[in-house]
Image (cartoon, rainbow, N blue to C red; front, side):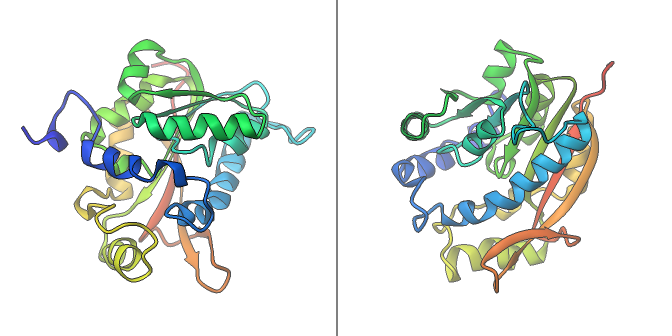
Length: 253
């Protein structure tokens, strides 16, 4: 059976093995995850802005997320989990790869942060802890899973009524094929060749449809572009390559 089409799990063993091979390099700013380090500021800015608006959070004492239970799916080495913990959230980070979770735990210990890291799948945690989180984040993950519909359903199951789901991913366009796939992997060599399967990219309409079918209501979306002059990513009206989306779970089903 082709495991990428297996309905029982969202895991793609090939992708897990690929990221596991470089697990120790998550916090090397010049290493294979350097593009994610550059991508992190803009996604944190969007998370902070959208969640503050959704929950009506005051930016008090620099910890606006104090009291929020937040799940970071596909957390990797903790590039998002750590700054969100510093913003006051109680963070659980999960990843399919145990080696990567080991790296995340070690770095959190070294920086004095209390983060609950677990090696498990989203659907496993959804069965164990339905509705346990105020916020569920899946940043640069859904394009790597074997079953996007099951993954979206797991996101919806994990977030509480009234909570929010934040997703970033790549659009399936000719522009993303040229720049998000070939340029990133073969010209700029930001990520190893074969990291992305363009056919698995989702358009905003497809992602919104999956989230809606899972019982969520898409509320916000924006494009994200790379600024070569600033060597950084920034918010954009162009959703042709990278984009972010926020969806909320209604208070009543």
